[in-house]
Length: 378
Image (cartoon, rainbow, N blue to C red; front, side, top):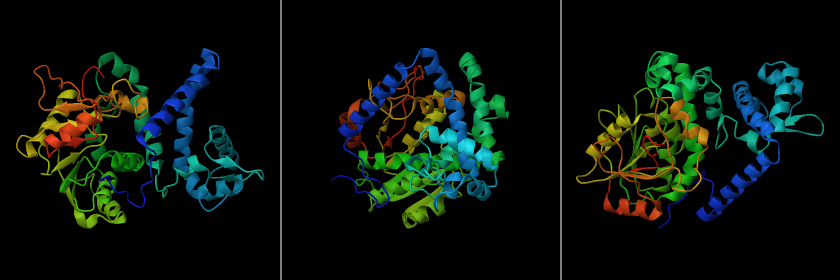
């Protein structure tokens, strides 16, 4: 029986339709690039960094929230957000040129579909992601990308003087931005995850590294008979009850703080999103080993990647390379079946395609799903 959708979960097109649409977008994008001289195309791509910062600035200023009640002139908008009217107009002109926000015939600014996602209360909000990617801490990591490529070493110890997650403990403001960004990505991915996998067979589902629990909330809404375990560092789960309550699943979730390097709660199924790619291979294998140790006897842990061999990635390539400039992890696109690391420290050959993932599921009641490929070749 297909998984049920929660009222707030948008309906998705069939997988074949979605893949066809993505292929069309890919080829149209390539055609757009080829219609301009190569230097112009490269400069346009480089200017993408400025656009990203402009989106982040609009999120910091709360422009989308200010326009939620209706269109505003530049003076009215500037007054609402406490900014200079002419500077606001220039920022809006840049964003509108790329399809974010809208300028009406009477000169007032208003929301459109893209800008609506930057509202803090949007059902699927990416405001948290915009704030993270425009933060000074994030920019500092990417500024040293060449160093990371040259040395093969992660940047946070050089930028922050310690591991990224240790730094988060000492910078509550940035930690909140980071957690909000993870919640944002969950809101974007949750519909696809619930549509792609039937969780109704499992009694207890543990989300490892769950943050505020947005993804777990959607999974439990689609599996009404299941109970959930939300597991993350103690400081990371502090805001979880608010999210779980808002989604009506708080009574079915046990919130637990701890480290997945030491132990994880027992469950029938394990879910990890945007966790494994944060860590180098040896630590990623240690995380998977901790989870496998808590599963039923003889269980096999499995990760399903962001795409299939030979297919285009399901998430933007910059996100897949984030680990190179960030915490030192590696993210790829191929699914992996993980039983035990080989002597060389690599993971076994990928289990490819939906059929193999279904086979893994039926061989074991304890699984790790929707993770990432872990190999030094990614």
